[in-house]
Image: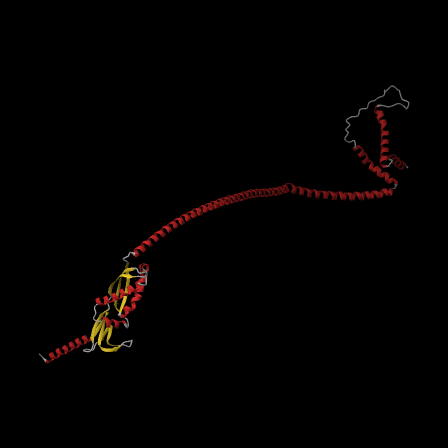
Length: 432
């Protein structure tokens, strides 16, 4: 074997040895355990001087040959807590059963208490000590509470027990995780009697409450029926009122509708009358226009023509009148110049017209023939005293002069002109 190989083996062994030594000197602590390293003195936070140090989780190195390592578990220790014939307030013995979970405390200052008391002690012994401590505290708490309070308010009972046992448990370096009361009984049937009494009271209260509830229910039902009836009556009244209002409104609407219909009829008749009136007005206007075209215009034209004709005739008459006036004026001048004879000449000139006027009075008399009757004997030779009367034609002819004389006398009486005298004077002037 060569020296190099021997050297290598020696180095490997040396390294392995160093690793084994270092491994034996390193202390690694898991979270559910604590390591108590004793061998050197150290001062705690409360001023005490102890010969150990505690490692809770993590790692550290111990000094070989000087320090030694011991382990403590932090696992939970379940306990059954039970007390028999523990007197409660009122001297009533009770039997209480419960469960608790304790463990070695890892709090600051408490872990040292646990290390001093339970290092190298198994869990059974630690649990026994914790159980006895809790049972003692349980008896102390029971003495301050009545059986009814213990039985009815177990949460309060458990909390008071925790408060009572907390100081003692912490002094031991332990920690109480859970404490629950499972059962509370007694050997004298006190709780049973209380239960029966409470049950009876509960039953009584239940019956009373049931009766009250029944009465209240009946009252409520009656009130509900009354309310329902009142509501029904109110509803019926409201319905009747609404129906009346509806009838009134319907009547009003019908009246309004009839009024509007009548207004529409009146408006229609009015419109019809207006239309008829307008039509009649148009017809009258057309008739006026027709009459004006057929009658008025021709009448106006005829009137204008007549007016023009009348104006023309009037102009002619006026001119004739002017001419006659001029003639009469000249005649008058001549007659005035003639003196008295002028008057006679004027009358004589007017004589034919007068005779025509006199004759015109009998112009409607038509003489077909004249019969002359002779009333005397023609050849008798008889005569009257005044010369005898003449009959027949001779008698008619003999009467003409007398008739002319009578006519001239009438003209003289009417005009004041003696025609015969004028004629005699004109005849004498002619002879001379």
